[in-house]
Length: 90
Length: 269
Image 1: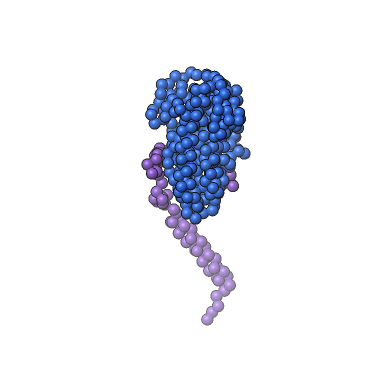
Image 2: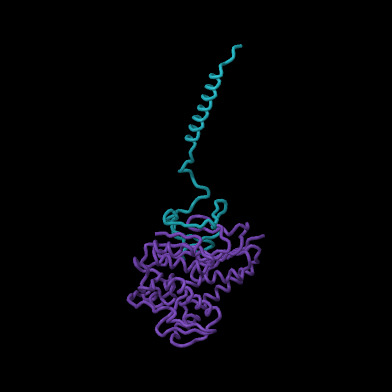
């Protein structure tokens, strides 16, 4: 059995590496997060001005998409807990 | 530990109490105390302690320990805010059409009352007594909720959250120890020994230029390039003062004012 020359082995390894990289890139591009996917949990529409809990009416905060938010590093935010309550206009 | 909670209405708004390990009767007692404070501090009841003080302007009158403390807090708020958080805007509020509870609709609008004098000139507070300058009056609606939230949190123990109409104080680590999860500017923050408050002009509004937030510099409903401001602060009282001050200052100066005073804020134009 004839041995493959060293240059052929190196070229094969390079081609395999390039194919793997190109394949990964194609897969990632094809599986971007769908921006129109429904949010979980559902978000209250921003247009809602008030909400009611146990018969009491609370003012809803203005839509948070605008304005300027500044938080010092000492303030911890979380995505894993639902708020028990909110600060709001009254 | 079990999380106990209670929702009720007082101070003209919705209120919420939360306590880790607290007993239902403790929360009920706290809510009852807020009810007592409301009856003392409302300007819409001629028999309230605050109305008696306003009606007796020009002479020294005895005041309860709570009203004395709150009047001193009003003087502190005036100083902290550079005169912008001014409890002495009662006449201007009434002139703007806010002479009765908001739910009952606006009263007659008679704009044009002069701006109030500096609060330290119109209000003197001594031990168990207070005196208002003749022809003036105070409204504590702009500072009472944050201050009361702080007082109530002291009563409710080491791990509680008091929210009085959006002005709140979170004491201790909350249900999971990492802080109380509180909605703030569309995010959920974990607040631990921090107050939060929101001030705005789009709620309690009854006309294009008529709302409840009076600018003491003009004696008129405030004109600002901000519609709503939410602020974090070491206490609920400070959060309420800072939020109103920033809203009255506007976007640029409000941002500057809050830098170094607050660990977090939201300015909504």
